Picture 1 (cartoon, one colour):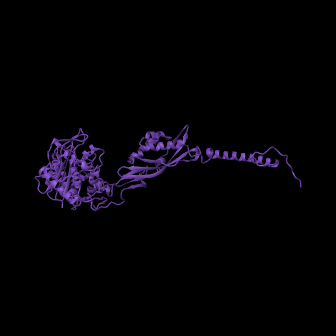
Picture 2: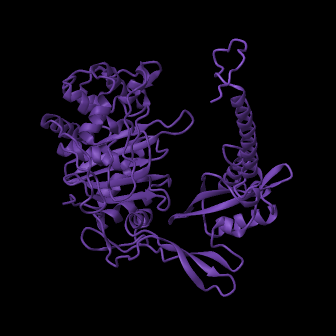
Picture 3: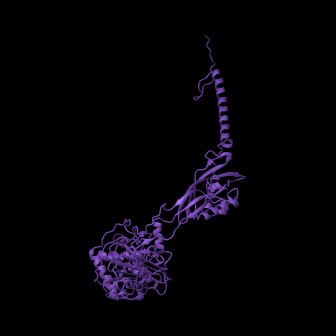
Length: 550
């Protein structure tokens, strides 16, 4: 056995492994192999990254510039910048023309296009999937997915234009067609089974249209058709109910009240914009909804107005529940009062040593404002919501605005809120409901259709407060600003309102009234005063319908 001895070398560094002459040769060989392996892997990586079938611009995915171009194209398309969208493609003129005819021909109002995750494609291209949400006017949204491909041209990425980019089934032989089915006015009946039409009562045009949308709604479809023959190849999307009931829509409306409301508004001599609502106090069933002019915006239930002094019914409720006043409490009514700005009464009237009853019947702004310190900043909003349902979500059968009584931002706004100004918003629907609640002592959600969904939660008014409000509104007719109704039969209560709009616009005129089981509210835009503008309309209405709404 031969023993090999090695000559001692210099001292080893602490990280050098001990080795003899043979081990050094093997180590050198391993080092060479390692280098070759690294070089091979590097070459393979370069092939995969730059020349292989999964080519990509960088280690983190496709070139960000390609993704940015795709997002820009989709954004331009969605914002109707069609020339700009076309300029991002390989065929600018054709792309902008096709995109325009696609969206306008199918009555797409505003495409919503959402890009997906880009991915590398063959030949160095980048593919970007996207989701298209296409709102079709008055019908609904058509949703589908497609994809676009980007290719590098010189120093920029361009969208490779193809018809199938717009929709996978759009081609040289097939296109899309929008078909709308009959959207004629739905059949409707009043509470007694009588037929309702907008021809007989024009104010019902927007109401009946909204009832249709809330029910079966408009119907239509997008069809894929042969470009040559026009034959339908397939249906891409359907909108509306598959089956429409032939049964008439049942409503709570009363033909007599509706007709009377139409005539009353038509008798307004200056033909100003006006609207009114009449409803049953004991159930909330709406008997009439009328607007002048009759077509278009249904301001009676969706309008937003400062209610002015008609809101003093709510303010009085808060004051009476707080025991801040009683009807016989002396509350002086000066001509003006300064709270950050000057507040005054209509025609700068004043009533020294007036009782609160007198302040209410004469609609004294300064007296109500002087009582603001007895209420917390949120008191009016709390009472409006908890006892009158204002600001809660009402489901009346058609879209409606349900009011707002925000907390005042400062003392001046609090003063204005006491008289139904500042940021308080209402409409005839809300103020008719306020009148009904004050009369019966309990909120009932107004509604146009039987058995509505009711999610409101309210508390009944204290019996004493409701009794006081009935007394105050009756006195306003017999001896106050609502005397225009005093010659009519029956026990009628009311409240007038004058609501400021702006410094350079005439005031809106308001009046609310109650008789028997019916509560009514009317607003006349630019009416100046409630008694002079809304008063004659309610007088005409109540003259035409002597019944109590039962």
